[in-house]
Image (cartoon, rainbow, N blue to C red; front, top):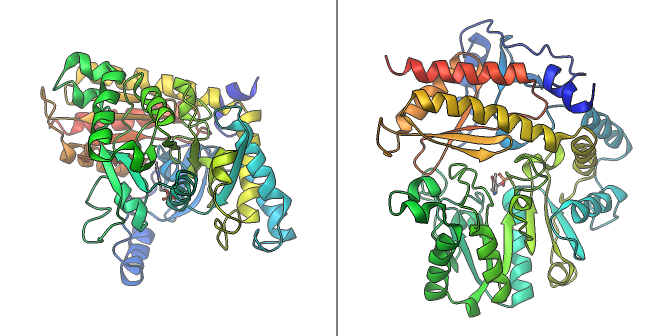
Length: 461
Ligand SMILES: *Cc1c(COP(=O)(O)O)cnc(C)c1O
């Protein structure tokens, strides 16, 4: 049996955790309710909760809680545990590193792991030009550093992002993020020189023009027009885009949109930055989502799936651009922590050795089949979209394209109560998104989607 077949039939083999959905109590159970009360009394309420059960163990396609409930994981901790929770190679690498040393600060006395991660990123990211990488802790921090690099290289200041974009919660990345609630409301003023361009959103663009919705070049022309008129290439340091938008609703732009935007950037001395924090590392059935359209970004930002759950992020890009920042202009106390680097190397080895890019494509095929069948029976599923193990359904009021956030919430809540972790997203809050770990078995994945289908049917009553 090859590696992928092993995953397909059994999920992650060496997980000691039984790969079975099982409800021992109501969701949440009594221990979780107790812990939730402690959370409310101790943790700022601004830090929200999707599913009020407290985890004790996770692996393969299962998250187990303090009350003995085993839930099917269709969220991967928001696209982080792509290789699975406590993936065996990651656990071994972390254990070995934590016993050797936990921190020296790479800027004080460097260590090999950081360099090896940079080499791996330079090798794996799109394009065979000369590259350099720098490591950080979070996605938002890496996005900020990509902007620093672009400004240092271009000696220009403006930044363009898109409708429905999500880039993080720090001050600059709040400015870059589109959605006010819950990310920005009341937290301004925001960083200046950030401008917004219209995105290609095929499902919603169809309301204006059926042909336009699927014509990526036309959508790019619309965006470029806004950029040229409202910002001007002479002021513009960088265009930042998620090749498939994550929090904004798993929006896959029409074919040709990304290449046209990238080409315009190249022709106009503007740095093209791909934010692949959510789409990177096999998630979409390619090592990076830019590969699907042959787009080669000047800089690429990665995080989430990079290190099997440990906090790590990176900016990788053209050597001359990355080296435009002066010596000691980039860095941070913890950036590229040795334990996180060991985890990243083990994660990359797992993706490459176990054929997880291929596995993500299989998972995508299975999910799209199931969800398209659901859509054929239910006109409240307005759109099914995504790539690889990053798939979503957009829910609308019957027979319209009016977003139905209440329905998305009701379905998610019912799925949670039945023991399936599913997340919502979208500018209109009406998108159910599926981000299973690639270590999930076909059986668990199918069962998880069946539970979601039942939850959706149940809302008709
Ligand atoms: C999650 C996310 C970020 C922010 O990453 P953090 O690690 O939460 O700071 C940035 N961009 C995209 C596309 C993301 O999905």
